[in-house]
Image 1: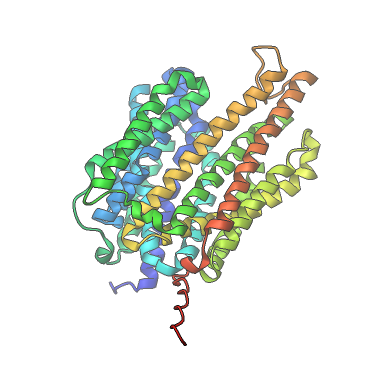
Image 2 (image 1 turned 90 degrees about the horizontal axis):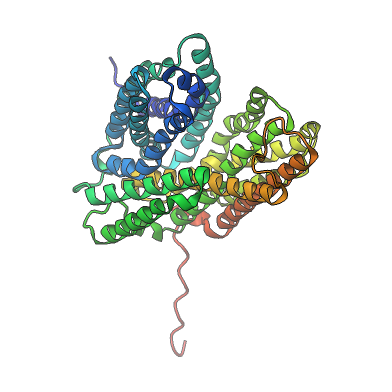
Length: 490
């Protein structure tokens, strides 16, 4: 068999990262479709349903940074393939689980594999495509979005017409294809790897800190933050210890000197703010649509335009950012997200969505397409190539934490505004088929305040992009030197 040229191996690597990451992303959402059926089959109750979803998200958020650092030490492709194998084995365990406890354990193990898989997929693209990484990340974003759109309908079909266990078993052949593509696209990456021992104390403290923080945010938003103060105390102590260890380690997992890069620090701060705005909008907009009278299927369809526009345009904006610099896209994209969110404020009837709401969807979709590839590529390219895995892990972690924090805080704000206007303790904000003008008016007001907060986060991200991102640094150009002082008497 003739040797494959570099261009072909790059494309095979891109295909492997898209398919592998798609599996990890889909499993974060497709299980939601199956949870009512799983609950009836295994008799697990509402708490069990919640933990089937949460176990996966918690281990993902806790181990992104560890997964990236492992790839930098031992090889991104090797770690990517190991993550895919772990994900497949955990999927097989989930599909065969005879009870809720084993299913929840399997979901946590899936999250571990998914964390190593997704962070190293982006790091692989950074090392294989180098200065063309923006376009590659754009293609990765577009095609993983397409898979994410298709995932829930396919999962629903499997649950309805086959068996819920097949939403996990179907991962096995697809993971095998992922591994084969990654092997065929293999490139020599040894020169880009860091040397030395793995920072085990740092890895443990990072996993404990981010895991406890995520647990506190998710459970606190659902059941009240007062009962979960200990989780935040554990997170604060673990993260403080992590910083102390990392500053003294000879080979730290997270070298803090990376944050001396203006673009690395700014891109990750903007990622936190913008992904908080994105998820804060998407979650409550979807709920609000059903409050207005749309069916769940219709509400799901109305989320497709944003993904469709991103599929069509994300790679183009990523390529433009490679050539012209990312700053324009990293302030205008979030600004459009904020404007699109504000446009939805007057929408309080189902019919309004086809007029005012259509403009909001268009603005939001365009802003999303302009933003996602350039911000990810900037965060990756602003770190040295031998830290690509850590850079990917940091970016994935801050996006996940931003989204969880926003969903928790915006949900809390919506509840407070609603409860301030409604005396009934059994009333639920944004409830589907809600009756009574008092309740509906309170829900609309609560939604509007929540969306104002989401828009504020988007505009804050735009400000960071405008002030913090440097096109000169992104292009690898040195800042102009200050003129030398004139000689005395010259």
